[in-house]
Image (cartoon, rainbow, N blue to C red):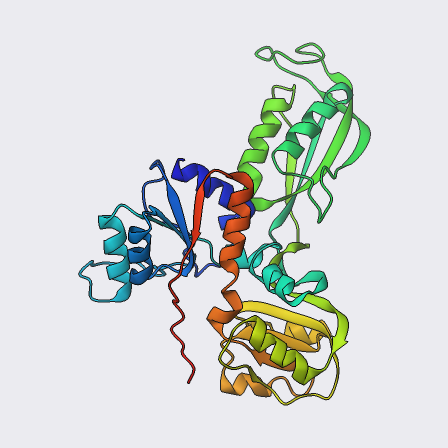
Length: 364
């Protein structure tokens, strides 16, 4: 299988456009046109993981965390990042990462945490804004179906669990072509009146180029009239964290013990118990302290994440129970997402889970 075929499919699931500005998700090492035989799935593509890939004859590593966050100016093997990259290049092993783009999509990291906890009625905790746009175009009545199909096929018209959403109104359009035109309807040099459909549909901004290409190909007019409007609407399926509900309320202490067992963590750092039952749960894989106020506003009883600093625990102020289960622990099941997404599409492709524990934090 070509590497770019595999990565293109992964990016249709978690578009790179949804990664945070500081991130470096995507292909870190490798030729997009190379043939891939086996893939090793991991959280961190450290030197030990690259060595494991060599032993298992995997020429692709799919990791959650990018091994390279900043530009490397020298390759001398002076640190673990340089050594991992040098070894991967020497052994012709590609490294591909899905990081905050996988955090931010609805079926990504946080949804997997919710599944492990058995949460229902899940929603994005902090949806992203200003990533949606609206396309408005006009075409003859008889061509409206063809144009709509092209727009939907290019990814427009998706709202939550609904697809092919559009709003259509009839109106009268006018135009007059000069002598160099070849109008689809009417005559050049004469003003023409045409009963048209105004089609409005929503789309994520990152598909704009492909959407316009599909529109221009399907539209019958030589000159296609369209408007693109940036929206302030939140994208309810893209954003940070997730909130859901337990099927049955749980005692705080018992739920904390369940967290420790489920996520196999050495300890759960938490704020004082509130004395309330836990019904609504907010989560964020990795470092999620920036979402504390969102979790409080959501009326969650507990916020589960990693990397909380000492002073940040005070900000709970008895309004919510904070449970820090550790960065690695909160994201450890991310490899299951890689496996589920790829095995559904490429059922004859070898996918192996890494046996290397890359958690740099140990508990006594």
